[in-house]
Image 1 (cartoon, rainbow, N blue to C red):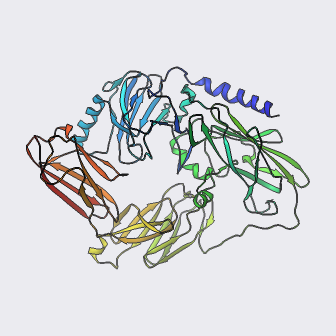
Image 2: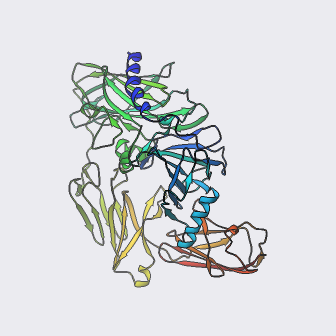
Image 3: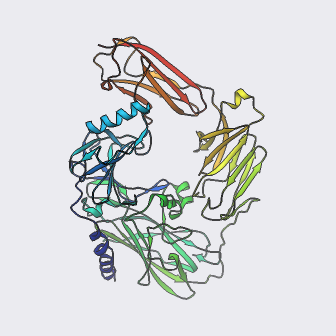
Length: 561
């Protein structure tokens, strides 16, 4: 049976999908052997990973090459996210993306810096004309780095279609050595309604996995009745890296018939947020592990395929069923899980505890919750399902349920601060309390009269905070009135203990200078090769402002020949 299912799967998936993409068009973007730290469509916080994360030997500055002929169609530089990123459009209609770069090639770097100085902004987004920055296959376009939200030096590489949908780059012939079968870490089974039970319980049950010698798994037999569904925690590894990566495809079979599939070939960015409905969100928040549901409930993700009865499994009394899960990576290494399900109508069962509150969220309706000086507005379809919500406002703190329900879009929180003096109002912001120590994390706050308004997708505890402390500015590699003739870079560290840094501005002799900001190290860097400094005696002035308007000014003289 296993051989037959595998053969059918290979014919239906690999025989069709892989041949639809050009195999020799795109070359590898680095000159070193490709080893991955992240795979396509890997499960990440609030999104699927849109490309391949290629290791750069724990260093920055490796040459990044254009994967094919084309032109630079977009350049984006930001403190967070992709950091420094290039988008190259190719004659065949695809676009390749290169992110977390250290810097661009000399001609692209000059183009970008010219625009940064014109706009007096480090963060910038540009859309060059097709003839402005033409590139050839394998030509230098950038150097690898660690910019933006990168957790370590690597190159993020994507291939997108004409509709800007990311596609697994390995479908285009990008080859990664992989002979390792996927690992199944855990398996859970869910009763899907009030009349369904697993092992006499109406609550989620963990199923004990029993590994066998060939990398497959059996489980302990389960007893069930009614509609049930499974969820799996799985990962993959390649030959040359021990990173926990995402898999390529998951299929399920009930008594030999396929009833559900997750196909991680392509997705669109406007749907990627629905990852929080694909995984058991509450489990992730509490256990910090992502288990993927092998059934469909209020989720229109395009990666969900071949669904029979939404992947639900209907178990009747006095029946025996065999449920199989096939987990496969791109190189067709596979692991199977086999579950024996006995249909048993138990005389004694444990129902799931149902919690009710005075407040109910109905997904098809707008809901306003107000108590005292605090108000919360949920708009239609903010959440995936209806539920009773905890809501309590006490003094300047809002207790808004536990963060165990995933939101599809933002909701609004407002605090009336009319009882504060005008001076105090200007220093207030809304913070979400996170972690066991309830650290106050700034939530983007706007002021409208006596109202402070924040938007968020996270339930939890929110409170008013006051920030009267100015940001700090400290020179790192120089001192006041120092000669810096042999220096290439000027570096300062900026920080804020309250609401966080909102913006900064630096000038030399009154002229704006480009300072790159790395939020991970909190360091501002100016490159003297920008040639802004033309005098021997120079006045450096740096102004840093936090999110409530407190600002600090650092000013000093330095000398340079």
